Image 1 (cartoon, rainbow, N blue to C red):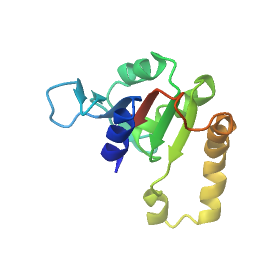
Image 2 (cartoon, helix red, strand yellow):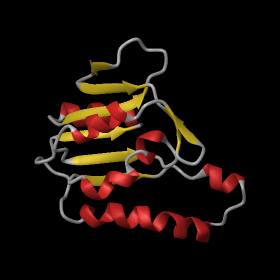
Image 3 (cartoon, rainbow, N blue to C red):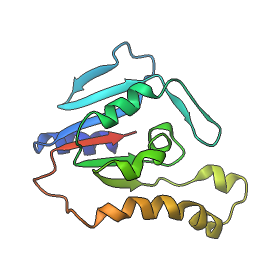
Length: 144
């Protein structure tokens, strides 16, 4: 799904950057199907620890004036590392949740999840009403 989304946005003229984990691939960066792919030797999530040095990833996020930052999944290093910095990033933020399986596995109820996640959600939605997806968005990093 994310590959389709990123390549189709790039074909429409948007500059799309994807940050992802480096899985046995020799290149840290490449242009693939008109999408800039940035790979980092990072893994894990905030709950149980992130392995690797996040400096290069955070430098990439801070390196430009992005129009949109799309974060896919919670409990993954690409999202978790950005949480402390979201208020300082001027880009519109989009969070696409794919479930919180770790909480379900330990029996946490949905009411507790809403309480836990509300500060994240409210921080993200503060900017979401200011812009609508249109031709003015040209630089879009997708964080996988």
